[in-house]
Length: 114
Length: 107
Image (cartoon, each protein chain N blue to C red):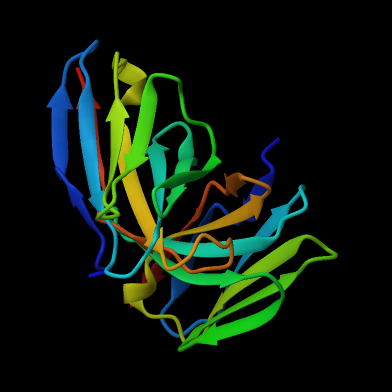
């Protein structure tokens, strides 16, 4: 158990819908990272937050957005969903935002878009 | 061409064998991450390194920044090491992931 929690574990929805994925980092970790893992693209970095502020942005679509709240939990919002958005979404946390800090991964949310 | 390449893609070993997984990258990176993904999907961070060598139990990771190459070694492999091993490099604000090496260790 990494100490990072993600909800829900599974999510099934339809094209065009909007969903919110939630991540609670390990106690004391200020940085949260979001990743997408699909069968054809592998793991991709989406976005990083550090202490409430966006720190780095990867291949995140404009239909996706994220935020980190004062209690440090983070939410990833996916809207106008398409079939290709079906994937495993992981969040990870680390103590600080520096690149060489070890990241601890949550169990992931499996999103299926029908 | 991927910025990060791993080899081999698939690897089958007998229990007890010494295993090496390679990661080469074409971009300058500030750190490299080795991850282990279990058959159930969970991801565990194994190492984050920017130079030299790190060891944890039977796992050893090395990196040569000049040659843009990292290796993950598993000594005395065990069936519970069966997993997908993924390397990832960070450059600027981007993370680049390899496609993973699927390792199966046979008893």
